Image 1 (tube, one colour):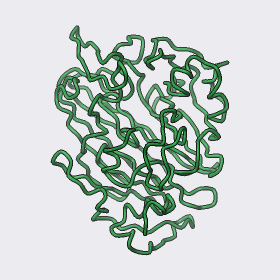
Image 2 (cartoon, rainbow, N blue to C red; image 1 turned 180 degrees about the vertical axis):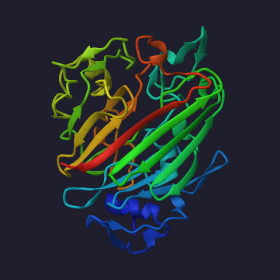
Image 3 (cartoon, one colour; image 1 turned 90 degrees about the horizontal axis):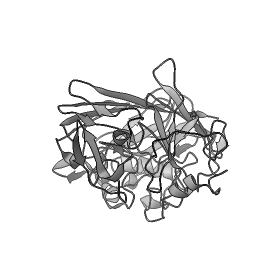
Length: 391
């Protein structure tokens, strides 16, 4: 059986079941009547069993009673795939990804599905100051540092524990001056697939030196399923009245601008592609949407509804909730058909989107932005949820 010719849902199941590609997958009926592909737990499929930097990688499967399944690898703390029942009860893989560790290593887009750090998004000119001292980072995005530098958290092997069938705990020690960042940073990220059809992500970190931290996940979503075409007809709503304009290198200018009357106004449900090709300097800089939205404050504290997206074909609805003040909306403008996903589709232009919960880009150099400084004795804690239902 050729894995790359399977449908995306079966392909994902073959990846996560030992020897499943040489067998006829069994089926089980979930509590809601949805047929889900029966899976074998451990040992994991050999495609994800590697040694990288002297540490073992593997694939981990989380399942809930409703038929949802989340597959992750500890190489980069990546979401490999996410099976969600669509309006017809068909399991649909809504996160694009690869079927081997090697393909993640070789990908021209290094961030697919990854846990991002130490600093998600961009830092201008690869420099920032703390207490008068300048720290210099590797510039991997034109003149700027993006997502932690040359070897960010997407390229490290996390220590992984799966305490139950719905939880994966990832830990990593980022040593003092790794990629130029000060302090030994101890990080823990917990992914949990809840019975409410939520992927809940809890981030924690502590340091022994003053540093900056901004953690997020970089899943690329297509709610109609991997390989289903572009995402321009997905209906998006963002709970943000402002965004942070950028310069030609996608670094924020330091200002906040109202979205009203601009192509960035998603306060009402709007097709992603409705205004994406308008003549607009900001859209030109990002080749589409690649901007941070300032989320409307949640006066009650806790999780805030940041965005809602609906796949116009699948009927799958995704709500994004977070304790973070910002949301980076990226419309897949730099996808160039150079990589082949697990279901055989190419990463064609705008065939997936990202909604990255975060503090603002370049905050270490922008005193008016919410601070990303973490001091010794403090605990970095933030949570985000991707909740799935049907429209």
